[in-house]
Amino acid sequence: RKEVEQDPGPFNVPEGATVAFNCTYSNSASQSFFWYRQDCRKEPKLLMSVYSSGNEDGRFTAQLNRASQYISLLIRDSKLSDSATYLCVVIHSGGYNKLIFGAGTRLAVHP
Amino acid sequence: DAGVIQSPRHEVTEMGQEVTLRCKPISGHDYLFWYRQTMMRGLELLIYFNNNVPIDDSGMPEDRFSAKMPNASFSTLKIQPSEPRDSAVYFCASSPGGSETQYFGPGTRLLVL
Image 1: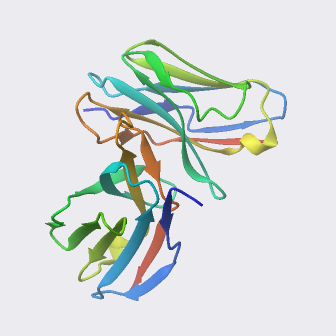
Image 2 (image 1 turned 45 degrees about the vertical axis):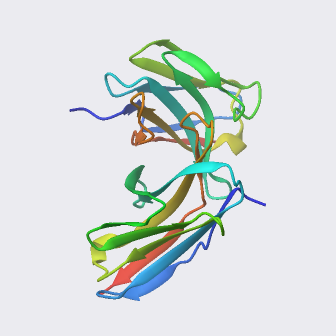
């Protein structure tokens, strides 16, 4: 079993739609959580950190459920420019900045 | 400010040849990471350095792979001899001390024939 599991998608949604991605992690000692975004043939870039209380950044909302070892990302009012692969990332306690990546969920937003 | 710089951006080589990938981290960053990305296995951490010292190389697939960081502004990942299964995108990333955010370079696309 992979340490970080994501639905690979693709999610095909129209502009303006709300879409949610889920992620589960297996190591209960995981302490830090992130969503990275990777455009086609580009490098991954940090989208947002995920905090225990949940956090929002514009149209993006991230949630963490430590009891269920579950992370989510909600995108509201999807734009064409949101089309990318979204990578769920965790760091274990004592992991010294060692990022563990999920395989990613691909999102395609169409007109 | 310049981001992480990697060279070459593309490399095509024949099986058995030596391949050297290069990385210049963001100035002032204490941590440097080498990743490999394939369709089958996703993004995998190969090795990382802190203050030029290798900290964790448990992700290095086998002895054919080696990495060095002779100074704070330069690192290499070498594959010798290369094999077709090494074909992948290799990313270098750097991070400042005290931060968990990593900044990735544009990657090197390696194709071993």
